[in-house]
Image (cartoon, rainbow, N blue to C red; front, side):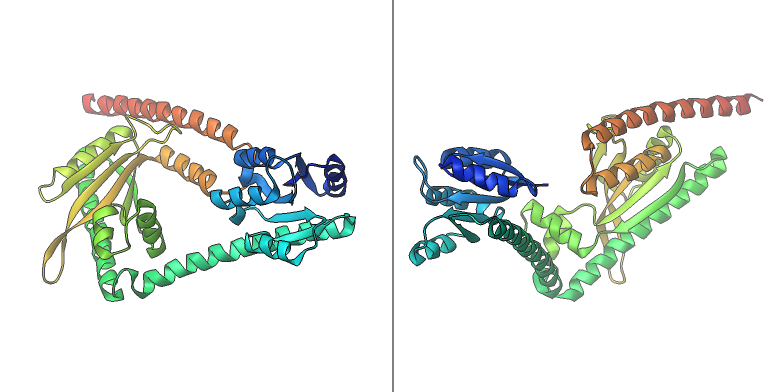
Length: 351
């Protein structure tokens, strides 16, 4: 059920509206504007609507509206004025201040229910439409010139694709050489992805930089991304060392979440590399992010990703706690399996 707040200094009015709306909403009440603002400060994100009296002691309805405008709440919570005031000038003043609708006293139950219901629905539709329009506008701006002409952007993305192919080729060569020497493969699979234009735009926007070709190259390190899935932790470090040891690969940055896991239990080795790409008329270094993780941790990460981006999940904290326990168990299991593999390899070499 959605939550609404009724603000009126007359207890009888609060009681009447509570009885009218209690079957359809979680109804909270406040006897003055100051109390209402305290409640809004605590949980404005949870409020579906505010029913507000205009004439109250200490802080009246106009004062509440002004504070809501100052905090930006008026754009997220629809306000319905509950008043015996019928003056056109007053209503116009309220609408100009951002009020969504009026409910006049004395209250008629059917009118109250319909006005509250319609206001909430229309307000939500308006907000959803504004979000969609804003997202589409971003994409259009991206496509129509925020990145400059489309041809340079496409050329840049080809360069990032080439960087992915370059890293994949080198890893496959290392895999073949390792297999020949040690009779096993250091990794199970390679997954790659090229960041979508919309994601590039949003990431630059979060970082606070204008969307330009230069800023993409400078501030985004994971346009070209690869994920290398290994069987054992020591294979991760061995393979990463062999890759960055190559004299034309430049290691820009390393984040070792295996030795220092994230708080949620995530474990992986992240490398930001400068990779040489050989174009028709030049050799250019392009950034690429390479993530190394074990098979078990890759499975764990896919499950954690669903939790992170899926909405309306109950008991999120409990699920996060269970995932953290699983991540710790995975680490222990990975090293146990690695120890067993070492025993098998040592037995084979001594035979």
